[in-house]
Length: 558
Image (cartoon, rainbow, N blue to C red; front, side):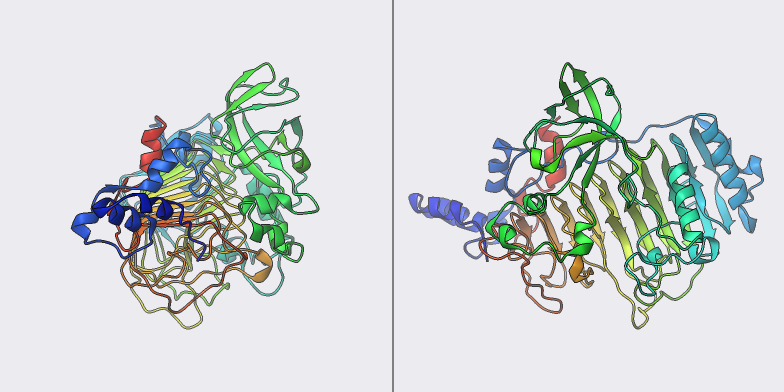
């Protein structure tokens, strides 16, 4: 449905084996034997190379992750050992005060690494990283364990939903290791304790915590150099927020959906949860300023049009250059809570964080594993969610962009799922864009696109037992915006839902996935008409070059 047949029409000029290969690549006929198809260069990739930042179906994600995809995070000098602050690694006493003292003191002195030697450290409170350039480093995920005994409801309080009812917002926010700038942490905890909705994002949910630095002249998606009207408040290395607002006709939202005929006729006004996510806010670092021109670390994710009032603004003081490495966070074993009633046995959360990371980290027996909340340019590498099963093993929400999750594992649950619980998987929602999930093993879960019209995200080189379900209510709008790409995905149970997306995601690409069939949760397209999608190498996971779309884009732009 809606599959682009352009390359099929050209094959009438060809003959023999060339014609068969072209038809297979376009998804028009049954795939050839694996040996014949193996390692064929993708025609769609050849097409992408000619316009890497403006391709209609494939997004540019080659600079996703901390420090624009740096191979490894920086090694900051060791400034503290938690044992010197009173922590004991025998699991006998609460080590959270000592760990938090060490983190705070190192942060106040300008940053560095806080080491947690081998052992099991009982923690009865949240471990908080609120200063930039602070790394919490264990001796390895198999040698250092933080044993969390209490949940966020006990520690901070009930965190109700801004959408009413008895839902717990600990279902999609907050962590027992919580990387969040101190100012945002203070406003969050005060709001929760006063029963008010806390401000989560880069400029707060009221969208009034910002100052205009300059307005921006029209530009096109893919541009890295833009014209601004005033550079007096801009400097090289500065982190700014590109802020674009929607207009009365919702042309910004339609643009995020690909500007197709279906987006033009879609009813946007009643999608109140979706419209609460705009203005779209995209944090980016400035790499050069010259006269009225500004060069950005990453190319523009969208067009910039005058009707959207584009401007560069300030943002909440972000957490930058901080990370968590080499440890396991294990919560006490309690049954998974019913759907949306999570108590907050959550893992590692990055909030209002930029250029931060987790490396070699395991979370076990958690409600929610790794979370990105208004976080951008962060990397989760060599992470694993295991134990009794999670609601969201990974989630990405509140306008999180340009993040990289690679070499990740969602392990099979160790106890049966209680009645009334939900399993999602690798979640993305809330207009989050240009995020990458790469080289993953999902023994359970799904590619959870949780409505809120995320767009231009990539999932590549992943094996999945596709047994989870997506979420999202009707007010959150479409499942997908434009330029979602699933590239080289092995599905072990033949379930199509949320993996094969050529019939539902506009301007998308589904390349080299397993042969799948529809069963269980079956969704209908949000948009009418030709979706202008691409399906290539269907039934041949691992059968195309490049095997990993993100890594190929990295090599292309080095």
